[in-house]
Image (tube, rainbow, N blue to C red; front, side, top):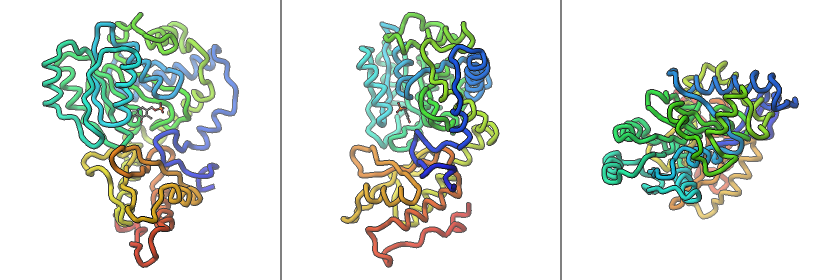
Length: 384
Ligand SMILES: *Cc1c(COP(=O)(O)O)cnc(C)c1O
């Protein structure tokens, strides 16, 4: 019961733990062209997503079938013209993936490779933009889920605009969990998916777009099913109709998930919960002797990477299984040059779950003798 009908909590960056009510919303079949679905759900969601992204006018939302990557690919493949060039800022797997997409689609691009623990340097980017005037678009990841790093979007977006570039932001793991106003930052295209901070189930992604920029994208797509402009036009013309079969149950669950986000108090409140989750996690883990991969100033409240213990008896799989038996699923590391594991703070996961997690981790440190362990679960110490 503690996990709301689930066997364990997913402390992963998506799919993540959803509420029972979100899952229950799927217990009904929906017709993809009926008004009850199109006007009653799809159009409502599109409008709500725009409202979550900005208070300004002039923005629209396109929903796209598939995992989050499909929406990134739809965007990259549909907005850059044949004579355009993309600057990709890469400091992790998801930045790297944008470069791979450009490569697959034969889009001219320049990758700024920063490794996995470096943030972009605005002066260095400015030099590239000044030197290569053929660049038309800039793409970056907001929260790099590989490490949990939060990238400096304000300064990069400002720079892109100073040089008149179209700005594309992969806000997959941050949208709905970290407050931001797309118009204030002057972001042209922003991408996220159903199964991250909105706390829906997987099956589709969405693209928030500046209408004036999207209007230029007719005929640019390099893929039929991932044609962002055509998907938008169909949804617009037919009041919420998707071009091809839509993931109706997932969309219905998402509608419920947005309702729950608003009931919680919106993005600001959710950000607060995730941030507190993360503070409890890091304080508890540090007391147990674990060390964070990133400096605190670089952390997002979304996911945290910890160095694996160096004890010869430690093995991730065994640690993982012990924790799973206790009701928590953690995530392997993804950093190539450091041995890490990751723990997510997003989803239907609350402060009390984090305290339970720390206790479970303490009880799962099988590689230490009792007298080597440090007491960890003094909740009052963290002051939270
Ligand atoms: C989850 C995620 C994606 C998309 O991943 P999918 O597995 O395709 O859903 C893209 N970028 C970031 C930053 C992510 O966290």
